[in-house]
Length: 301
Image (tube, rainbow, N blue to C red; front, side, top):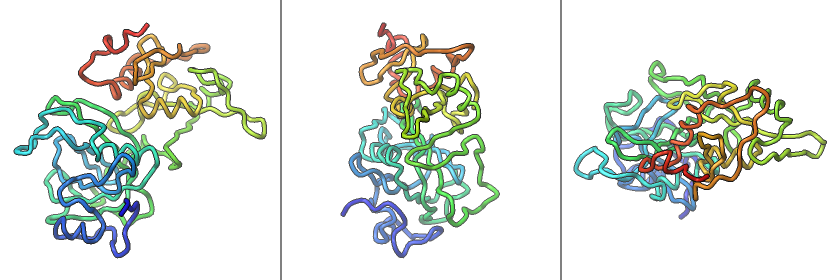
């Protein structure tokens, strides 16, 4: 059968399960071993958070989750890079793109105050709101995902350990879009024209539309700032490509397509608006492989 996205009939948030077999039989998490239930074509419908990777970071209502692969089966250490093409990782990326809900199950482990004392706990539905590449604690590249708990579900316990992230206040649509006052100022500065392609989207009623794109992502662990030097005015297509890693910026503020690392445009800037090199490099390093230096990857002029 195909993937089911949501809470299965008969399952409840906060329900305890003795083992993987019970999770499987209740359709909460079908794999008996894998931590991610997902494929690139379908998306990921569930994950188990059990402290299996050193880079996992559980804050309750949001989780920094490490993808699978590259781990020594006899230890808890990474011994090679993870791949975005591994089925579970690719599934979570598809869930991010399509805004599919992911069931989160917590297993017993010492690193999380939200983990059960034994067995497995169904913690409810989350959305994948970001993903990126990073050199992990063991020195190998890992795929990291930010999972955010969907509102209007039973509270997690203990609530005293639930860590809010006020920098990441968003509206849930097909993807996450922030439109702060500063973003609106930047869009007005450019007359709602994309800084990459100069496109101005005209709506039925004659209004114009563009999106404010944050270069360094907001919220933990990135902790980008809602500041003018961290915002671009982009059309919806280039904003999506930028957020999904298909587009990065060079230090010379050129738009670079990441598949072939070719320059497609020089960014336009008006008045005193600039984005900092620090923010540009941070975004680029989320998407360019750690095995290549920025100078090697961006020798594209």
